[in-house]
Length: 318
Length: 205
Image 1 (cartoon, rainbow over the protein chains, first blue to last red):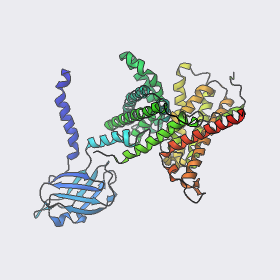
Image 2: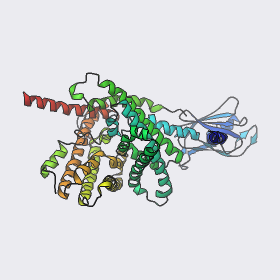
Image 3: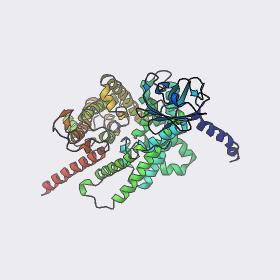
Image 4: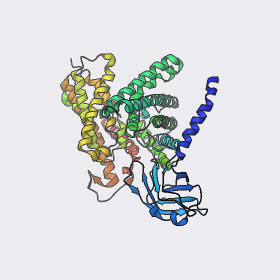
């Protein structure tokens, strides 16, 4: 415990640095640039700027960082009454997952020309990570909105105990496998242009991490192994286990993002299994028509859950 | 050293009807729910699965006497992964639009329980010809299941078949919505159960 406490201040500094990285701008007069709503960028200046300069749209141009050729159309520029905050409204909603570069010609402030500025508006990195996590767990839930892992989902959602066991084991294996897949993809497959081997390598990795977790768990915590060991084999049969490595390779996620995607996928699967198991335990007491008994009613229930999960589609916290 | 007593025709027909992967064995449900919105998707993914199933079955059948029993599952997985990579690259090169519509499901064939199950239960014991026939039967069974779902969803959802306007109106838009996949599969399973119940009742009565 003492050892951990000694490093707490270091962790604190790292965390703060991590959170602050989103705030750098690139010009000393521009204090802050941030996204607002779906289609606005708010620029905060250190002092008042001239209204004539600020409302002239030709002074501004913006593009998404990966596509410098595609200029985004600005619809409107509004200056606040104290002349320090400028709200730029764009024609189309902005893709806030990508950083946006905003160029301004000579900034005019109280008669002085402060020179041109190029600033970056991006979400806090923490926000991007949380978006990936929540996206994988709720908004794009792998079971209910991506329709993956259904064989294992219907097979192990009959009892709550089974559901929790399967979900927990899957989350652990998923995090292991995703981190290995990320490292292997970024440092071996991509540099040597072997990406066409993705499928072969990732399916091997998943089997390997299942075997690894099996061996470690057996030695480290035999009681836990007795309870959860049976579910390990099922992880390989789960398409989510291979979908997550493929997704992080397709999207070129870095280590943190891969971790968040894997954890979100695992917890989302656990949540889906648990909810489904609760309903199916009740269903056994109900009077289900004979033709619907077993799988058909389970599918209809899953359909209702899928409709309910559509409600998460607008969710964005950061 | 064949252990099955079934004739080739019997194997072929069983794969499509009695052991239909989607409706009878309830395996590989993910694409059945996820991308059965059109007949075309069903045909394309069915072709991909047929290809992978047949070639993996044949490969395993040829080398079945040389596989050490302890490493048979990894061998199956790697064989399947190799053939999936082949069909994945081919589809991405020749039908890019349809390939994109199917998303990740082509690459996820590698995790389909149906293929591994057939290798484990059939191809590792039977000679080449029988494994080939079984592979074709199972692959076609999957394709038939996908196309059946596609016909129901496309016809009832948008009034079209294979993109051609058949009905001239949209009966129930609900069927084409993504989350309706669960309902359609559930209702069709119940429908087949019901046919079986009625059939058995007639036999008894």
